[in-house]
Length: 317
Ligand code: NAD
Image 1 (tube, rainbow, N blue to C red):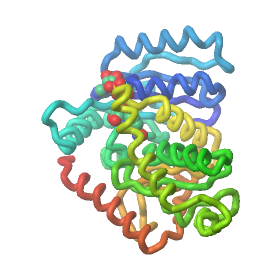
Image 2: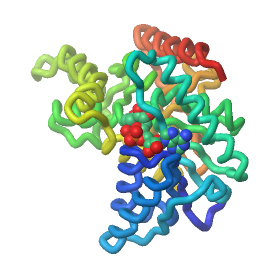
Image 3: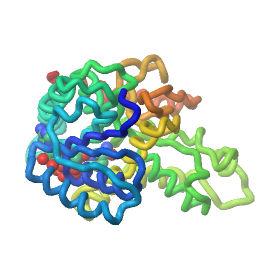
């Protein structure tokens, strides 16, 4: 991997892709070259112009331009936020099949360019599209990452912070599993600073209770539906989540983030890509952190994994 320059290629300059690009420009210092690629070249060109015009107000300078697949050759990270929307009457699996064809038209030229960095996938259903990227690229599993439940985890921490009136940064909690309806919160692992939330809930001197925890978990699971109902799509939160993962990789942070990663025996699972806490650094997934789940939580994980396995098995790759 190239180390003296931090170059990111974004494929898919729609709402999610450009929210990520906008976060990069505003946060500053994460990368110094950003290439925009979209099947709609005019759109990619327009987006590059628009972002460049804001650079005078940004914290640090960046080279931003609309490019071609050959520009992936010396990139550190290729972020994929390209996708097609569900058509009326189309099943989830039909959509999945069409997005797989979109990915075939993307991954093949990226690999052909000589790209040797890390793939970061945001396109939904993200766990399956990450596995599709892995299968099509034949890259090592540590270099193929999906955004997984990173945004869901941020939503959870925000809601728990609000409930306990504590800075979300001091809440240690994860949403794990499929980025979708079968995701869940292993509450046995939730900590406020170094104190277990289970212990806090059992303490009769306060009014905190388990029902509120379940309501928070439900709010996390349904927030995308609510946002989509209100404004048709979600993009700022996921854009910032992508920027956070890119920062962890390029800064070699070894930060723990809940990305979609390939399990190789962890959680008694193999081959599936699923949202789990991972240590993320310059080479992608450095380690999968295996949480000590209760039997009930293990069962939930198993069900979520099965949903993903069934979807992937239905695909014609
Ligand atoms: P969008 O329609 O605004 O943008 C999609 C872009 O992909 C368009 O610009 C389109 O031209 C481009 N595209 C389509 N086919 C292409 C191809 N073959 N090559 C290159 N570009 C191509 O959609 P959006 O709102 O930006 O959403 C993008 C994806 O992100 C969707 O799959 C959405 O479900 C997903 N998403 C994921 C999360 C998450 O948490 N992972 C959250 C929100 C949205």
